[in-house]
Image 1: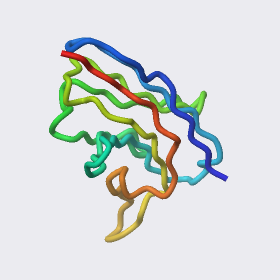
Image 2 (image 1 turned 90 degrees about the vertical axis):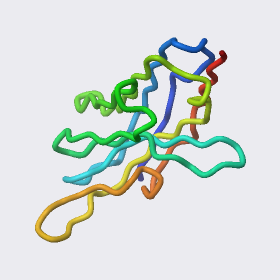
Image 3 (image 1 turned 60 degrees about the vertical axis):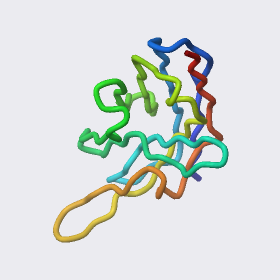
Image 4 (image 1 turned 120 degrees about the vertical axis):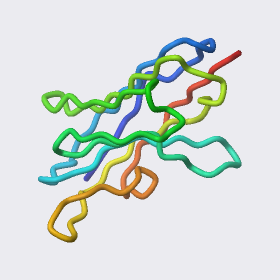
Length: 128
């Protein structure tokens, strides 16, 4: 059973930083995709970033250059370092995971909003 537990959300002023962590268990696929998505009440979920088993990362244009996704495999922890936060980053952030897909001779990841497993979310509030 895959379990994901986020922590590290909170309130910060515009320009500040937050570090989100996601403790994972049960995600034992040999090739996997781990990522973050966010959601504002009443709006569509938005993929933020993901990382694959090779350490390759992908970011939404809205967070490129400000957010960094990484993983500590020894601790089974996924990290999202968020710098230069802006009010439009305010949302509930979810950690998500799924098996990597295989097609045309290679493994690939979909966007985090498509993953089957997710945590309960952690709220981030950025004030101007």
